[in-house]
Length: 134
Image 1 (cartoon, rainbow, N blue to C red):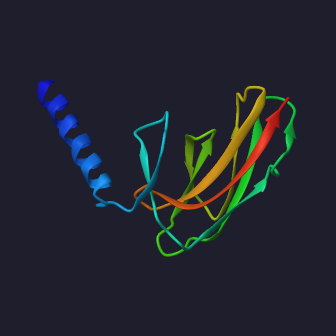
Image 2: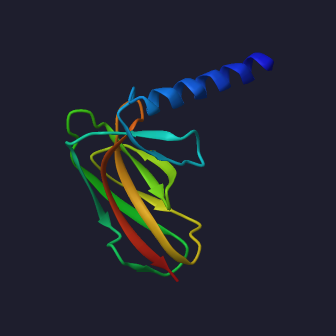
């Protein structure tokens, strides 16, 4: 138990020093309720697109189907990660796919897909829409 705490502290310290010193290509940290913070890495290539819902769509009910496509994986992309209001929902695979987000509360929500590497590092290639749930 004590070794685990020491290891976690050492790991977090090492990661913090690496990020601060530029040891990673980190541009931003994305908070995730489904796991640790995922470091977003720089990438200038690749194209992803949310096909539906449209930006500004008004949704009746508490769920929405998100349809997306990877138009170009670029040199490092493999799949996308789906985020809702800045939190990871799920990694999604396939060039074209869709996923139903359930249990949405009323109000505005930001849906975002981000191209990710095989090792789940989130790249800065992304698309997002904002919807309103009534």
